[in-house]
Figure 1 (cartoon, rainbow, N blue to C red):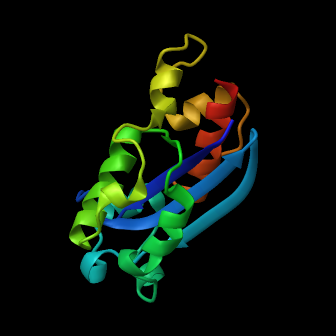
Figure 2 (spheres, rainbow, N blue to C red):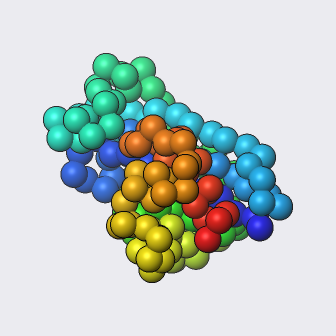
Length: 163
């Protein structure tokens, strides 16, 4: 089983305000690579509600690279792969909207317009009380620091592997 799991955190309600990304590459059912970085969002602007969720502040990203600078690392991990996310519509829209803001073409990634979604898989299985990542991880005893991008991507990969 080969795929790449991804998770974004955003600085504001804008889907173009990525402030962190976690990416986990799985080959033959095993994690072979992990990537995490903070991203300086537009104007390094944050909404307090978002910070309350993930704990990332403008001080954390003041000297971080922009999405455009980080994009080559993201591209080499996603290009041509099966992509998995826990709430795929959210993470896919963050990637697409942030790419648009930086004049980058989503088609260059050669990935599907729809990704695999572990939230949908969990919701479809009666063993899970909900589709929430933290609740799904509790059921399967998967370690999770919820809303930390790399931990969320790792957990998503683990859920997808046991589906």
